[in-house]
Image 1 (cartoon, rainbow, N blue to C red):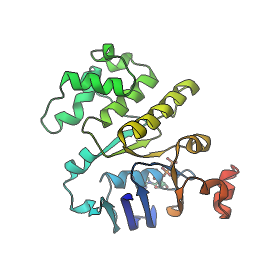
Image 2: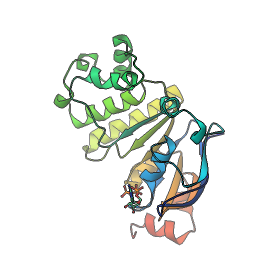
Image 3: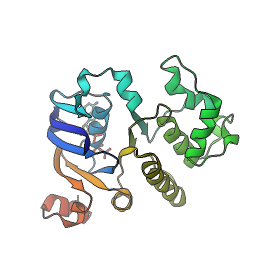
Length: 233
Ligand SMILES: Nc1ncnc2c1ncn2[C@@H]1O[C@H](COP(=O)(O)OP(=O)(O)OP(=O)(O)O)[C@@H](O)[C@H]1O
């Protein structure tokens, strides 16, 4: 079943009549050349950007009609450059609650750290003392604070070393399998996309050329996709 659907979405000169679905409980990876519109699509899903024309449905409801803060409770987002505020790990995990004038229980904060395989000893550490991999995990834990149905992740493993990249990949899979969360993410690494995707969306120059089961990336007879796979684009 689809959890999010784009219906004929256009945005400035960046996205052109994009129509496609994201299946519930799956990991979908955006692939395609630089500047294809991947990040722009992602930002449309949690209302950071709005379509000029067309509609985006979340569980059948037009997100333009939804309360934006409620939408962002249901759709958590972490960027590569996940902005961390100065302060402790707890301060950062508390941010999504603070937006609603609420406070995150410390017990819940510890539980979130465990979910991303971090020790509770980190809770009162300043974030600036963390390694890149630990920061990525805190960024992911922060997206889980409001128990979202969907996680949006943009390039969260860029600039991490190979071993840490693999650990974060395992974590993404674990979150999907253990909690049934739908993951929609972007990576520039096609091998990584193959390793971690159930589904893919292939974008080129703002057009969605293919979407669905990830196997299409290696089986497509579309010359544009074939060139991308050969590393020629
Ligand atoms: N705020 C903006 N105003 C105008 N153009 C923008 C804006 N943001 C992005 N663009 C342009 O839109 C196009 C798509 O950008 P986007 O970042 O969505 O692509 P992408 O596929 O994520 O690229 P990359 O893989 O390089 O991150 C690019 O040509 C970019 O220069």
